[in-house]
Image 1 (tube, rainbow, N blue to C red):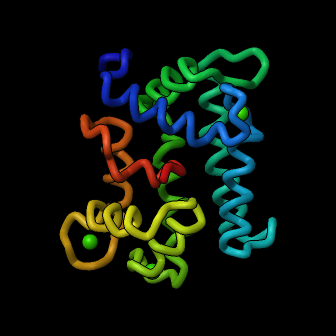
Image 2: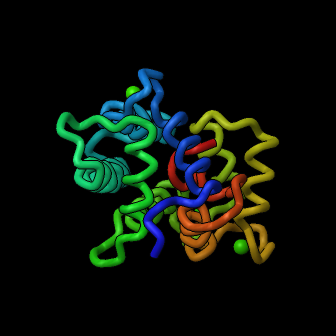
Image 3: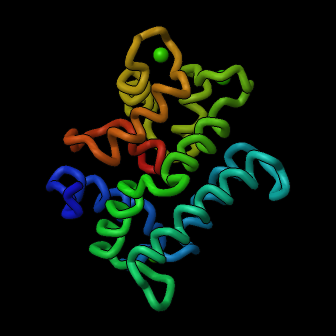
Length: 182
Ligand SMILES: [Ca+2]
Ligand SMILES: [Ca+2]
Ligand SMILES: [Ca+2]
């Protein structure tokens, strides 16, 4: 597979970088991811030892470790270009349990508050608010994610939207939500 990301993929990963770099120092470190994990924990009122809090922390850390390894970063920080390249390399790696898929699973479990195996509109809006999205954006994204239009997001729809964010050609892919993007 081509290891140079297409323009659409590079644009999406670049936007993701800007979103995750919450202290705006133009580098991504674990601290940036930790702030996102903390935001989820706070938003869902989860204790640090809560199963879902631990799962989301572990899933993000798994992804982060692979990004650092792939970018060959010596000091554990990635600039925008290094992040885009490493995200591409990690998402294409099918040789092991893929950390992007593990993350999508953990985020799905986090959203599925009542644990019924699908994400309702209310559950989705709660998540979107935690991420800081407007209600309008949330509705729009929900409709895009609910590809069969049955009024809820199944695990398959969720995982698939994450894959489209990683591999597809749609610059406005709704699947950015899976990775912490509004
Ligand atoms: Ca940063
Ligand atoms: Ca649910
Ligand atoms: Ca659906």
